[in-house]
Amino acid sequence: MSSHDSINIVFKCMLQGASDFLVKPIRKNELRNLWQHVWRRRS
Image 1: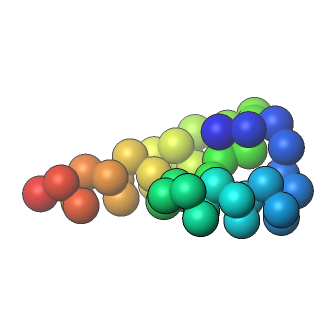
Image 2: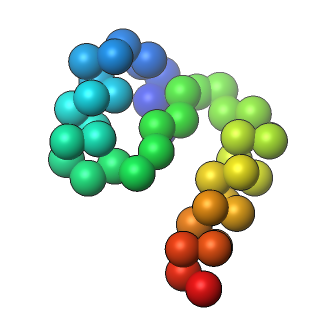
Image 3: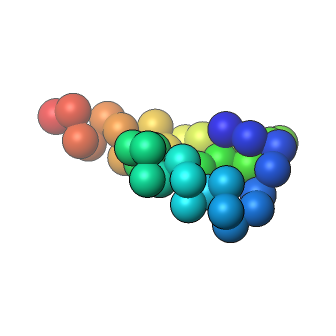
């Protein structure tokens, strides 16, 4: 999660293992979608 949405920052995070990137402020539907994705991967 970051307040910066620069493509360079997103790319660096993904290279270091991030599976998603959220920009502050987070919307409820974005957080819900991420949670559902994480939950499905664990099941």
